[in-house]
Length: 175
Image 1 (cartoon, rainbow, N blue to C red):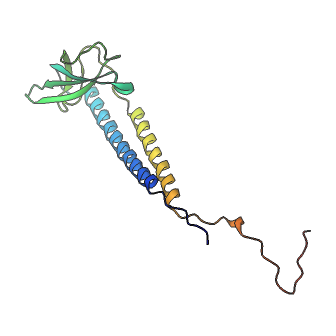
Image 2 (image 1 turned 60 degrees about the vertical axis):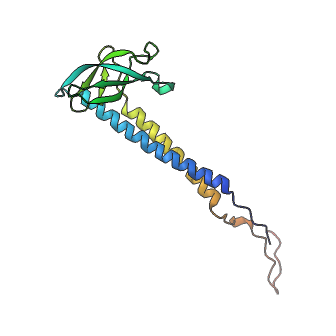
Image 3 (image 1 turned 60 degrees about the horizontal axis):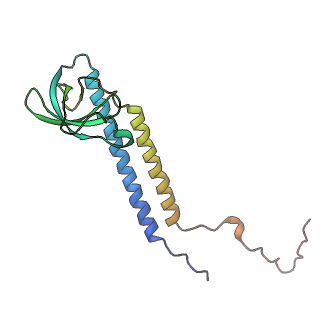
């Protein structure tokens, strides 16, 4: 009897965990894209009341995609404290933590804010969605690989041994 191939538990668990992280990461990116598009729409709407207020830089964005972002904290006209992200025109290297800046925010959505001077472009919905789709496709490939690893292997159709001829008949030589 053929020896049974051992089940790769560590690889399977790692694949399932990676797949779950990719799915939840894709959902988070999708939610972020929707939130960014709502913020951009709130700032672009001509009927929106905009307010300019002073703010403080609480954190500088970093990395490939966060290099032109600032996290700012400000108080709205109504007196509520808001912390949100704003985009700079280019790199955020000219800014420092604790720096005072003026921001413009939408009255209906205080999280929708931009710099008062030299605001950066709004986040593109399409680019963020492309990232979400890429993450989900990665999760699908990992899921397929994990299932292929777990599922029992089927015998290939051409792997049978040739049968002996039945009794009473001559074995035909190949034509």
